[in-house]
Each structure stands twice: as structure tokens, then as C-alpha cells.
Length: 457
Ligand code: 5AD
Ligand code: SF4
Image (cartoon, rainbow, N blue to C red):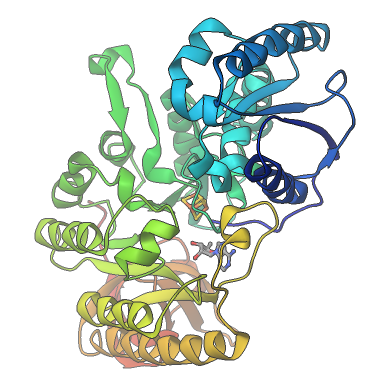
């Protein structure tokens, strides 16, 4: 998921360049990729937030010079209270990466000449792993503590935040820089909040997180301890009286483990709706996006999901016009959409976000090509959404009544697949799960006739 970028805090960058013209050029490139993150070059290392030594390996003496320079910078890092990040780049880094870390533990990161486009990601990771660690933990506790335990529920469907942050570093996305590392809320806190919501009449809970299926936590001792993933959490929450429907959003294909897929086959409360963004159907583009999965891996998850739960409806996010996307790459995306068949999907034109590696890549796609591709993709997705809704006409569905309609006697609700359903029913049914016979559909909703209240399980 993505939030708008705010202007980064100004930070001080000092790069010392050794050796050849190639290194001088590379140092310029590093300044360029770091500028959008707020790094301004300064003349000396003393007060810098980030010091990069762009090294040369041509003579042994040059290498030794780097180590002696690092000794000096280490003292400055200590004087800064450990706030300074030290990076070693260039040929020495390439040649003896691990050795540098061993000989000088004050070094936070080492990167070879092929990795400069990854510098923003590496700097973000290093500053989290080092000086920011305590601060992150503090912020996190505060963040989850700030959510009132006895939250007021607003209607029978509610969100429950279980996870924050993202470590995936997709090359187009600002979230790992703005929201920080992946962090899971403890099981006990989640259970307390779920119980409280249930007590207030909530029946449909959506577990929320930037990478919700990366959630993991220590199981309660009563349950035998050990480490739980989202599948186990869902099994546990499904036993809370009153919680009839459990969903989670948004997931990442890399964290879709076997247990979560199996849980969909075992836990009736886990709703048959999965929002699993794929972004592109082209392996070349997925690689450039640093997604960490291929189209086939994604399709395999989809097939296994549908094996576990045949009525599973699927949702996704797509980006068109990522740098370097060819007509063939786009066609691969269209083919993936045809193969999966989505219930709903969100699609975007690629837009460069300052500080992300993709903003700096070659092959930006002209705006008119992005427009054309977006239109083609959305036409197909709208058609699939319309067909999915139409496929429910004639069926009787269990609908959670979420509120009253505009006119007296009208109500609206939510199907197991997140579809909005409009029908005539008394207001007293709000909060109940009722059987509704579906008689009509559009791209965005269903209309139906109320039959009767479904007995609670
Ligand atoms: N350009 C276009 N779309 C983006 N998204 C994230 N970053 C960008 C970007 N730079 C989309 C992805 C993500 C969704 C929430 O927003 O598809 O899944
Ligand atoms: Fe952004 Fe990728 Fe993380 Fe989603 S998984 S929040 S797109 S970096």
C-alpha cells in the first residue's frame, strides 16, 4: 500500500572519492539517487549523517588508506552518538566486502559498483538496523498503544490493525522509507481488541497491515506456545463468539505460506476473498520492480487458493508503464489478468516517487502510452468485475446487513466477496446475517430480495 510522500528531512551527505574518473562519475550518481531522500552534500565528514567512501583497489596502499580513513571516521561516528551511517562503495567494497565489515565494525554497509541504484534501500535498512532501532521499537509500541483497547465499533464490520510497515522495497514504492520496518502486533493485544469488537456487535473483521500476511507472533502459552503466522491467528480469532467473518488486507505473494492457504480450506469464517497484488504479469518487469516473485509463482498461489477454497474471489493491484515496460511486457500483464479472472482490481499508471530506485531507472514510458495501456487494462478489469457480479444473480447469499438505505425500508449489506448488496428489509436487521436472493447486478453492486435471517453458526 502506498501513502503520499512528504518532503524528506534534510540530511548531510559526505562522499569521499578515491581513484579514477569512473569513481568520480559514480559518486555523482550516488549523490543523485540520495538527493530525493533529503541528502545534501557537505564538505567534510565531521557532522555528516551519511559518509560514503567510494574506494579504489588499484594499489594495496590505496586499500590501506581506506582502512586508516575509516578509523578516523569511526571516531566521528562515536562523537555523533552513533547516528552517523558509514558506507564503503567502489572497488575495495567489491573485492573485500566481508573483510571490511570484519576489520571495521563501525561500517554499516558495503556496496559494489553494481548496486548503486539500491543505495536508498540500503541506507534505509542500515539506519533502521543501527541507530534507529530503539527509536523504531519505541514508536511501534506507541503506535499500537495509541489504538484504544476498547475501540468504539462503528457498525457490524470493523478493521483491526495487526501489522505495520514493509521490508519489501519494491523499487516503485515509498512505503518502506516512510513507514519503516515490518512489525507485528502481539497476539494478546489483537485478541483483546477482537473480543471487544465482538462484544460491541462486530461480526466482520478485516485484519489490516501494509503486509498483513507477514504478520507473525508468539502464540499464547495456553495454546502450546511457538510462533504463529496469519493462518493460526485466523483459526484462533474464528473461535471468538460473534466473529463470523474474517478478512485480511493487503497481502504480498512472498508471504503467502502453506498454512494460510490451508486455513482457507478449514476455517469457514475466513472469507473467500483475497486481495493479493501482482503489479505486473511480466517476469522482466517484476524483477525490475524487486517484487521477489515471478508471474508463475503468483499463478501457482492462485491455483492452490482455489483448490483450498473453490469459491475464492481474487483482487489485485496493477501498475502500467513501469520504466522499461514494452508492449510485450504489457501483453503479459493482460494475459495474466485473462488467466486469473478478477472480482475486482485497482490499476495505476506508474508515477515516479522521489527517493525510490525506479524513479532513477532508464526507459521511462511516455505518458500517452501509459494512458493507452491503463485504458486497455481497465476495460478488461471492468468487464471481469461486471461478469463476477453477474455470476451471483439467481443465487441466495448470506449478506451481513451493514446499514439502512436512503429510503425507509431499504437496507444495504456486504456479501462474503465484499460486494455491496441493496435490498428491502427492516432496519431492525442491521448487524444480522440474512439470506438475500440476488436478482440483479451492475459493475459495482448487487440487488436482491431478503429471504430470512441466517442462524448463527
Ligand atoms: N506508481 C504507481 N502506482 C503505485 N503504487 C505504489 N507505488 C506506485 C507508484 N510509484 C500502487 C501499487 C500498490 C498500490 C497501493 O499503489 O499498485 O499496490
Ligand atoms: Fe510498497 Fe511493495 Fe511494500 Fe507493497 S510490498 S508496501 S508495494 S514496497
